[in-house]
Length: 276
Length: 66
Image (tube, rainbow over all chains, first blue to last red; front, side, top):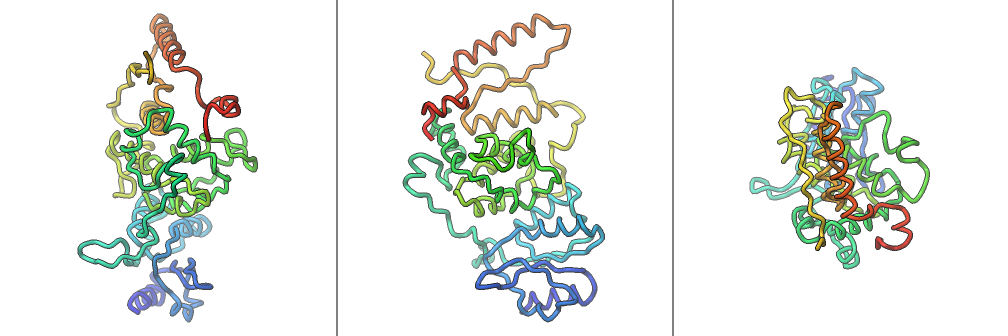
């Protein structure tokens, strides 16, 4: 297979110390590191629709071995998060080699490999009381008033079992100290989760960072529409700051103190809904 | 930086359904009257909006249907 040959060359020509790809275990593709020492395993290297944040493994490896050179299988979403991690100085582009694989289908390539290609199904109860996975954020704001939106989001958040799966899978979550485990902000190990604080803290941290890979929503055992939430978060970032995370090597507006302030505080003109 | 964050959080709270409960105003320590005016206006606005639906007791009392 073409890709195996490509990876073999990277490893044998000493361009990378480790190559992060997938191999099959009990019918599932799981992340696996291929090195010169286990070169015979390379024939098991596979790609399919399964996704994992390989960049996160790369970030952890780099943390322990700052000089390591890493090869990585990259879809479009992986590429976006690599770009983002470069801008946050978590990875060095000189130490990363990517091997691009098939991703979303397009008019040029009809076949796509991604777990996201199957649209999410929203059940009747969720449609009635919660939030449809596939709803457009603008439609959500237009169809429900403040209170309705709030109770719908609270319904979704109240299902949270605080498994931290969304954070653990997130390729762009790399802080050594996480606010979500800070005893005075959100106490670890207590249930029910502090809602909506837990989710809003995470949503705030996703501003200017989330690259819309959707792994958090895939990982969430409680089916909270996290991708929708973070998508709106970055819709705000894009409309206010004209910044799209992972698009290029530009730094997040929240990390730069601008030369001059272009925003103005909003006037206090909010009309109370339902006021006579 | 503050205004970037506040502008973002105002929009986020709007999306979640808690619009209008966060306000930013630049007031110098020399502007006592402006300070009083802003605080009075904001208090009045919040009073009209009613209690924050986030209060723990309103969840317990079933005012918010989860």
